[in-house]
Image 1 (tube, rainbow, N blue to C red):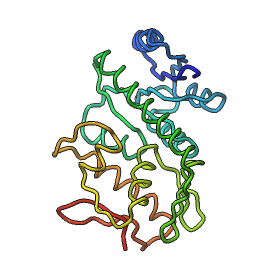
Image 2: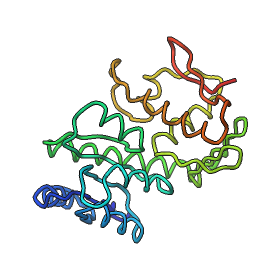
Image 3: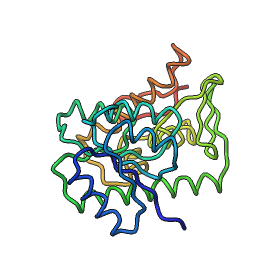
Image 4: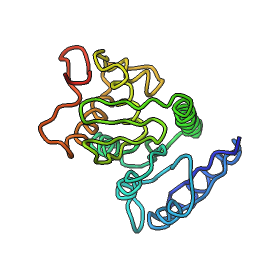
Length: 231
């Protein structure tokens, strides 16, 4: 298997060097970018398995880069930022980031989260290549092999986690999934009741689907229980 390709986007030289060093020691192929503009160019010219991204960058900001990336790519994005306010964390998750680490960070935590994201991304991709089952519900079509979703024929750009949430719901359209069900399946981590992560991703997913068919409900909230595909 080829080494994982990681793009580190951080304008602070010392932090960029630290991240690259610890990742290379783990056997990853690492490329550095020191501005959002440089990162955009590298993403256009090469293929990467994961993006480590600061938000406050010269040129194109981290938030703008996520918006651009999500137009045609589903690779995991881990934000590492000094912005620690809850609205900032929720904002980047809604815009398409898969994880958020606050500065100052612990090196061990960064490596653990990188490993987890890469494992899920590759396992998910491998599983879908083996089981090519196109899912359809109303005018919603999800193709696991091409990792694409359309609403009434219109392509919808989803993050890797949004895609996996929707695939799970569409695979069992009559089943009600609790937030804990969704979190443990998609994030493969222990769920804490007060965590708002699932709600944020569901809200973002609904907004993207509704953009192409206003008034149509695809994901229903079953109050006090969880979520399912709408009847």
